[in-house]
Image (tube, rainbow, N blue to C red):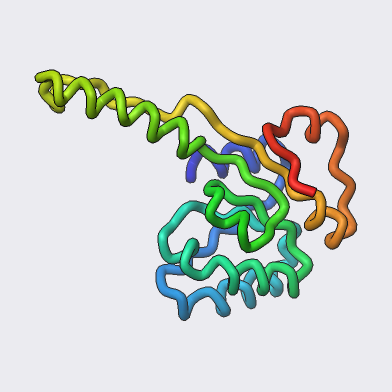
Length: 147
């Protein structure tokens, strides 16, 4: 969160952090988002958010908010963009750990790894619905563009 706050300061953006620990908190969070005049929404990865993805996408669409996600599971419910660790790459890398353990390596001796492959994805249908034009440079950097 400190990195996000630092990035917001650097970009001279106002960062509003809202927590929704229960599904019941989502509506009040969107009320606060609307009251504060948010220009976009970045949804962090959370099991509850994945379960509530259709509801969240509906509330964001009604508020005319572009949403960005960190997990592909959210993309099924619309949204504007995804930028998160590639789960497929993470699973492939995890398989090498399983292989090493099955060959006798002690799990405690294996290094902790961070994700190394991230997937930028843009959904043009959502951009069009929100009246947004995605800059060509950003489109060129996307791993996937969903029409």
